[in-house]
Image (tube, rainbow, N blue to C red; front, side, top):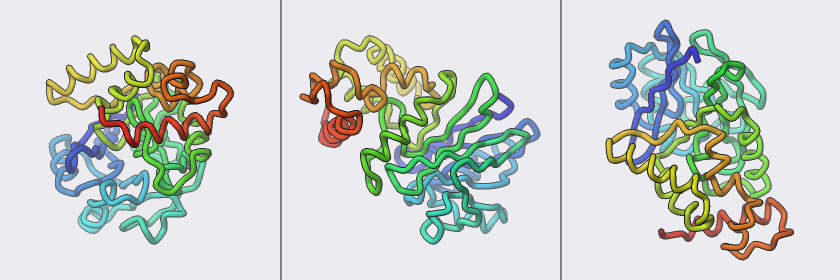
Length: 260
């Protein structure tokens, strides 16, 4: 991969990300706050060229206006978020290709959490692709459905699940351990979940982020990628012949009320 990804902790559990090219040109994905992004860019010697927003929620765009004003850079988001995404200057559509530092990123419209949610897939043709998923796909989880439908989210997650296995996943929040506790609850015999909990616990004990899992790992541990698991269905009382959308809706409802 020609780009370097730097997670930038923001607010209580958010991540902004710097995607930095070999020459120091960079974009920030989800500028939750301006000051942490400023500090990280200065520490990394990065020159910010744009902000790529995954969706309009304030905890992902709170730094947009200040950074865009100070550095005079474009703010990108889905075209449908025009008027509700702060400082947005360029609207992207499904399949649009944008770039930074010699690397190309494909825009994936992934409605569900919000109707204008976008994932940014970088270095798709390389051996180490990267996808920034906002609140659509978390490590071992997915976002709540604030605007979209279960059918929309199932379709969006299926698109992400179909990405190459080595693709690194960079979501909008540090929710991994709580998501994995739910995964262990609904699929207790899944040894991959046990291993993922050990790994995430160790990383958090060191004060390190858990983000940067792979699509291949998510397919093994993420309940929302595993809606056809007989054990998950049995745990939650989902009929064996229920559709993927029906199973997803039941898993999402169980996660919403889970207090493990």
